[in-house]
Amino acid sequence: MRPLLKTKVSFLLIVLAVYVLVSANTNATSRKWPADKSPSEVGNKAADFVLSNYQVYDKPPTLTDKPVLRHDYASASAYYGVLIFADQTHNRKLLKGVTEAYEPYRVGKKTPEMGHVDNNLFGIIPLELYRQTGRGEYLAMGLLIAEEEWTSPREDSLTRYTRWWLDDPYMVGNLQAQAYKNTKEIRFIDRGVKFQLAYFKRLRQPSGLFHHRVPEWPISWARGHGWTSVGMTEMLLVMPEDHPLRSKLMDEYLLTMETLIRYQKDSGMWGEQLNIPESRPETSGTGMIIFAIANGVDQGWLPADPYKKVAERAWLALTDYVDEKGAVSNVSNFNQLVEPPWKPWKPKGDMHGQCAVLWAATAIERMNN
Image (cartoon, rainbow, N blue to C red; front, side, top):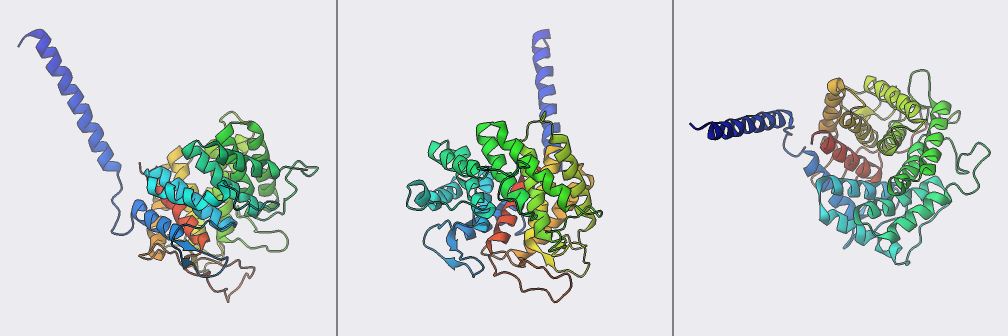
C-alpha cells in the first residue's frame, strides 16, 4: 500500500473508532423511560392541557376552543412552563399556542395588572416570548412590569411589595432574572439577588428548611420550598459568574438542595409539609424541587451522584399523578395547619401542578441531553 494511501486509511480508521466510542458513551448515558413516563411525552400532555383549559382561580378547569391566558401567577407560571418546555423540545406548535393566548395583551385589548408580586409575575410571559421570537413589543411589556416592581423602593432597597412569603424569591426573583436575561442590564440581577438573600436570612431555620412565613405560619411547606428553589435556580442560570453576590446565592442553593434530599420520601415524592413524616405526597412542590435539582446536575453545581438519581426517582413518582389528558392531581391548598386533618387537594388540573410538571419535564430533558 502506498504511504499516502496508508496514512489516509489510518486516519479514517481513527475517526471511525472515535465516532463509535462517542456513540457508545452517548447511548450508555441516555435514559430509557418506562411507558408514559418520558419527560417529552408527559410534558406534551401537560402543555396541551394548559393550552386547552381555562381556569378560574381555585375552580375546576373548563375546556376552551382556543388558548386563554388568565392573569394570575399560577397561570403565568403554567404558560411560562409551556414556553420553556417548547423551547427545550423545539415544539413550535406549543409556542404558537402561547403566542395566541397572549395576543389580547399584545394588541391592547387586555392590560396586565400590576402592584403586587403575584400580579407582576405575569411579566415573565412577554419576556420569554421576546427571547424566543425577538419581537420588541414583548420586551417592552415585560420590562415595564419589571421596572414597576422597583418604583419607590423601601429604605433597605427592597421592592415596596416585600411581604416575607417564601413564594416571593420566585415571584420577584424570576421576573428580575428574566429581565436581565433579555437586556444584560445588571440592575435587574442586583435587585433580584439582594431580595432573595434578604428572604433567606429571615426565613431559614436551623434545620436548613424554611418557614413559609415568620411568625404567622411557621410551617415547612413543600410548594413554598419549590417556589424558592426554582427562584434561586432561575437566578443562578442567568447571573454573571463574576457577580459579587453569586457565591452567597450559590451557598444558599447548595444548602437548600442538600437539605431537601434528606426529606424525600421513599416513594420519590416530597410531602406536603416536609418535616412531618405522615404528610401526604404532593405534586407541585415535588415538581418544582425536581426543576432545581435537575438543573443543578446539568450545570455542574451538584454532583450527579446522588442528585441525578434523586431527580429521576422523583420524576418517576411524579408522573403517577398525571392522567392521560395531562391533568395533574394531588396539588396542595395553602395549608397553615401543622397537624392533620389536611385540607382537600386543589381541583385536578390546577395550574400550580401543571406548571410544576412542565418545569420538571423541561429540566429532566436538559439533564439527560
